Image (cartoon, rainbow over all chains, first blue to last red; front, top):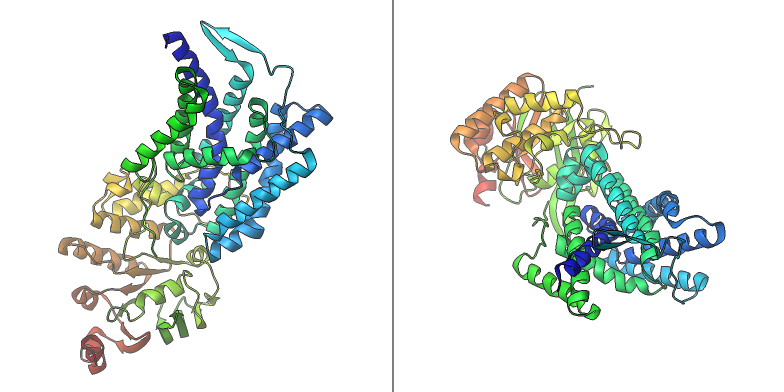
Length: 293
Length: 244
């Protein structure tokens, strides 16, 4: 492979990885705080894509603007789901939440099929096919914008976790739930807010997904596998890990698709995931945690 | 009303195994009360009930005027009761200073997004770290500290919430004699400042020189209460430890 082609696939990989990181961030945050695997995460992202498509087609609202509009909507939705269902189940038996979110994914899929039909969709704006040249590199505008927005949102999340009281409480709850309660952290409030933030990020990733990829109601099954792989590779609950793993997946996909064939791309990533888990079962940045009272 | 801890007829069982049964005791404000008893006598279960980690099936628990039954652990902390665990519960991937700053007075919706560390919080954290002689470790990751240093950090972090009652679960466990002497001195100094202590401990030397009264638990209830000497001379206590 020529150096130029390698550089091109690296750039595309990084741009795609940025968006993968945003899609996986909410999933790993929710797992970190609650130990809940949100199987419906990708279905929520696809829901964001459909809502953005509708806003674009019927009201002419640009999908980039709909990212901002969808954040508060999904924040409220996340808080409602957490408070009304997830919290109750999580307190009884955490494993039930997998079944519950699985069911929720199927409900969302059915709802999307009923409203928008099962045909392939994509959000095509005036700048969808535009690209520009940087030295010898060819940069698609939509990919650059979606990576930029993803990084901005992730930076916002990082700042929230690092510099605010809430962030301190979330990090404490992720590291040791018992100790967090012990020092006065209201873990129920932290849990609700974290779940809501996780769902809001998923909603925000929807329009970006819709601009870059075609989607239909059942697409979320393809995505949730990828997202879970990213989260597991990075280390369950680690945002930094999810970011690095998303970048690795993005780059691995692009480089493999130009050197071998597009079909090999997921396999290379999963082989890498398998190898890492053999050596580090907790993932790249995951912590081994003792669970006892 | 003073901040006495009053526990009356508390019961707690786990799937048919009775951990606490008709358990009653009182911890007077300003005392250093010891809670001793053989393994499995219910001491830690009682701690978990008082601090909101377990909900007792029956009985009444009060701290001053406040009813404790039904409160969540963070609410108990805000009433002025802090605790430590047998196995330290610290945030191992945070620095020593961050561990100190995590304690939050009240996390309401209004204060959620306010900026991190306040000046007075940092100052108090530094003072406490100085007090326990671990200030030089402030920027070290807590997980890298020695076992004894982690115990001191947990104790220091518990004090950040300015508790009135501090419940320590085997504070001397695993500490060397020099550390135990230091710990004894710290507890005395804090107690002289008005803080109440309830201490579970197996190290009898530590208990006998520091605590009064001493409460003895056996099979989920308190079977003796008195001065260290009186408890030592009590035949029921000997039976509990040696088996009857």
